[in-house]
Amino acid sequence: MAAARLPIVREACESGKYNAIVLLGGGEPGFMESREIARQYGIAVTSCAFSQMHVATMLGNKFSVIDFTEVHNMFYYDLVVRHRFTERCASIRNINYYHARPGHEEGSNIAEEREKALKGERSEAVERAVAEAVDAIQEDGAEVITFGCSDAFWLQSFVQKRLGDMGWEIPVLEGYSCAIVLAKLFVDLGVNVSGLAFPGDRPKQWRRKKVF
Image 1 (cartoon, rainbow, N blue to C red):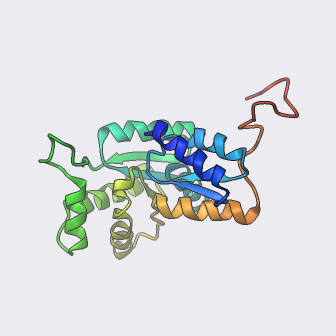
Image 2: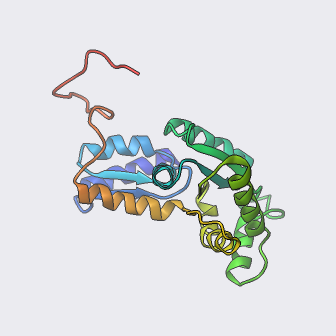
Image 3: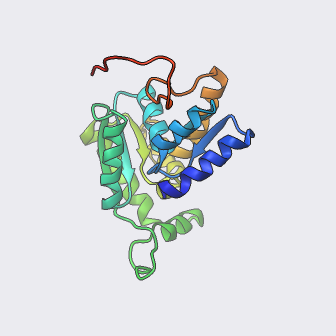
């Protein structure tokens, strides 16, 4: 997926039509590579996990992630480490739903749960997400709730309302909004990713030593 995305990013940069690029999808494949490509054109790139984590840490001391499959949980775990939020992430909690896949149409399908919720019907995915969010607050110390896979972002409004009805005054974020707003912020500030973090092929200045 990342390999397929990068030529599209380069094409968008070369077109001269855009001043920012937002990568959709909670797992943000190709994000780091897209930033490297776009920096050469002065174009900012944002993505969902990166944006959620940064916004969350401006709103509370720790955040928890509500995610929907065991495999994606561990992929997201790596993103928390990559973006250096291990001390600010309280937990990743799994509601155990899956994408519909050929040969696996039966079972826990997150898309079906979304349809139920939008129709005003009871959705077990919503119930699980709310329960995990409450436990994240009470047991893990979360002060902000976020979501992992973009297929779980639709839960945001339902979880926010339910927590508010319970009396929990806590922000609930989803990645699309955070990524779009962060892209606008970078454009408004006139800033982009550091050329020291993402140097070009022949930088004018170079550092003899990198420290940790």
